[in-house]
Image 1: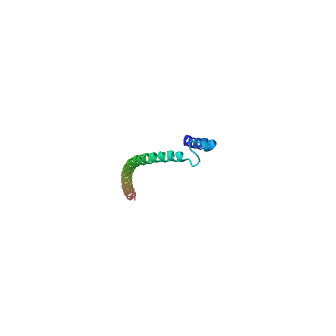
Image 2: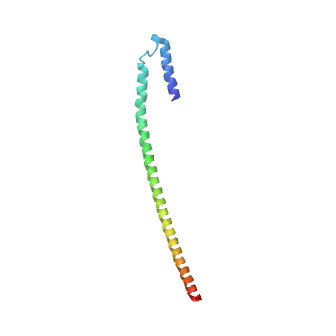
Image 3: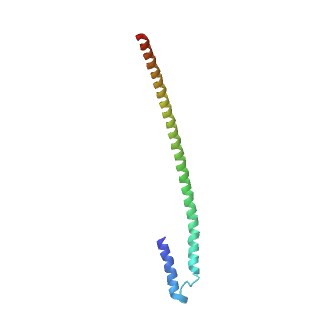
Length: 108
């Protein structure tokens, strides 16, 4: 971009300094033609690049979805494990309580 801007500045500067003897006088018709040709070549290149980037984004999005789905399944599995452990803990607590009640009844 910097070199392009410097080139445009040099083109205009040289033609402005030469005055009427310039190879591309003030309306800069030749410069306009060159810039139009550059724009005509750039447009298809930019479109092709956008299509490639879109394909990459689609693959990245699909991969993200699969990773998120796997993470969700793992979290569900962990929730089930934690629920099972809590249930076992409550059952064990109930058993201990029953044993304590029996011991208290035997002491009386």
